Image 1 (cartoon, rainbow, N blue to C red):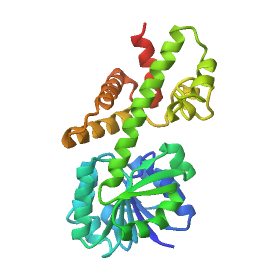
Image 2 (image 1 turned 60 degrees about the vertical axis):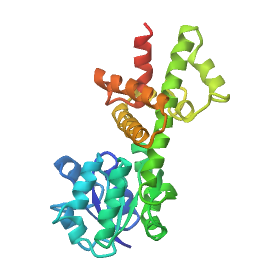
Image 3 (image 1 turned 90 degrees about the vertical axis):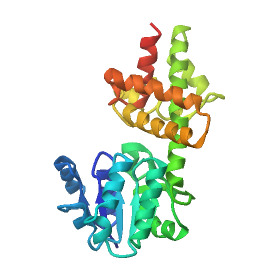
Length: 297
């Protein structure tokens, strides 16, 4: 088995570490947060004093960080992971970041003589814990072949989307579609309520008809329709509205820079921005239904 350095032990990172440890890998981890380090320790990792220390002797270095600036900060630290990792080590960034930053991270790794993948995930904390994440992967064929050994124990599916940055591109496109569809589902629910339809009637029709989508069949904003949906537990996430806002913002920034017309995506972004401004960003993104109800009063 291999030695893995894991940088970033938040809600997603710690359970991903646990699955690497269960698979027999030796994991050395680091996070700036003492509480996150403790979560990593409980997951079975050896906690290092810094990212560079964690990378010493590592076959694979995994990062799971909030934004592109954090990934580039770790990759670009003159006395950090690139200096201390063995030449030819594999770097896998599982963060969701902008495509430009992902490509810069690949360039830093290549210059240092390393292999690299951008590999954002879908599946949330539940998927991270169960080891059922989907990885959207960008990078060379050689790096992808190396990465499968590690990705397969943290997830159930790996899709090689293309060259450097392609994983991030696929992630933000997917989540823009998800944000739009959840908004549409929430608006449909409130309209149905106004028209006197029961949740059960609406669910039975939409979940088996042309309006069916993940946002109603897997994470229905209507409680007691789908096992495990956040609406069954007062919208405890799950995948937070704040994270949806982050991903929609990345998508719209990419749309502007590439010239893509994404009006619905931008509308969904503004709605989630308002939800976050109202103090609801820590709830599951399906809590959008509550905001639609409020605006429909």
